[in-house]
Length: 255
Image (tube, rainbow, N blue to C red; front, side, top):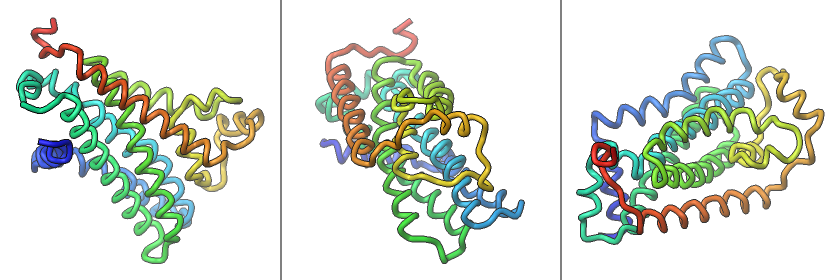
């Protein structure tokens, strides 16, 4: 059994009717924002920019990565199925890679489909294809990086979901607006640099205005891609190393 087969098994298991509800709920956040902004009279461009920023990059992408990436090992530990998983005649690194790949595919697919639906609801059929493809590419890259980071958390802690949620909705929310180079410690900073969107109605929030007053030069695209790649590779390497050697017990046995 190779990593691809495990990824397919993961996807089939995760997309069973009762469990697929999570994916659907995550996928409609952006489109719902688009419907809301259109109802309040925002232009198509304003609707798309705001919905993609608030509904997809900051919500769907992060939530899906937390749910599926943070659950790579955590779900098995909390569900007390980790002994069954580890007794399979498959190398541990293959098990992890398979679930990691499946989590990336699912997170990216939900985000990309949500982005497409948001574009259609915002512009109709006359949307900017280049803009949409750029956003889809950056969302996919974000899925790879976030799933890798949260997958590492799932190996290191049985509270991975909680830690990932704090990181995703506290750290990633405010650190991108901190003046200077401190913002480089946020994954979302690089995603926003690669896929910039205008603010709703052209209005800046107080945080954004303060940030721009002290902000250093924009981060060039190559640096953004390289940083995302390094974060992904390091997270994956450490995850595999730890998962291959550490002992994992169900929650009751772990105390």
